[in-house]
Length: 141
Ligand SMILES: [Zn+2]
Image 1 (cartoon, protein in one colour):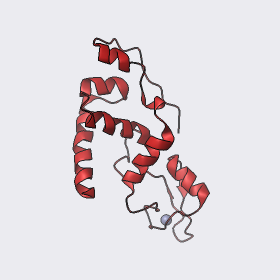
Image 2 (cartoon, protein in one colour):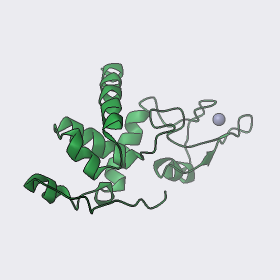
Image 3 (tube, helix red, strand yellow):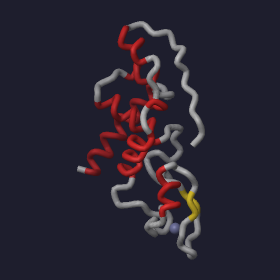
């Protein structure tokens, strides 16, 4: 995925905000955060979202966890997709690692005012994801 830029020049007021000023999703390990989040989006397995054929080869699995474009292995389907196609992350500017961090920050009770200094989203987006995470929890319960 493309390298993301983070603005760490926000004027900070509280000591807690200062402490978090240098913290951003780029500091979180992709293998542990994005992989976990992608798995959360696909509790029914790693499949083509168009025809449902399971991904079994290593090359496609690697692309799956890097959110890179994959061509379906079924000759009848052959369509392209990524691990976020037709998921809660479709059309979102957030990548799985940012979403993982957002989920953690929300669960830790970090205020939206602080969250938006760490993750490049606005307060409305934070509020939308609070509701989406609740809906996802209910689905998996
Ligand atoms: Zn397919």
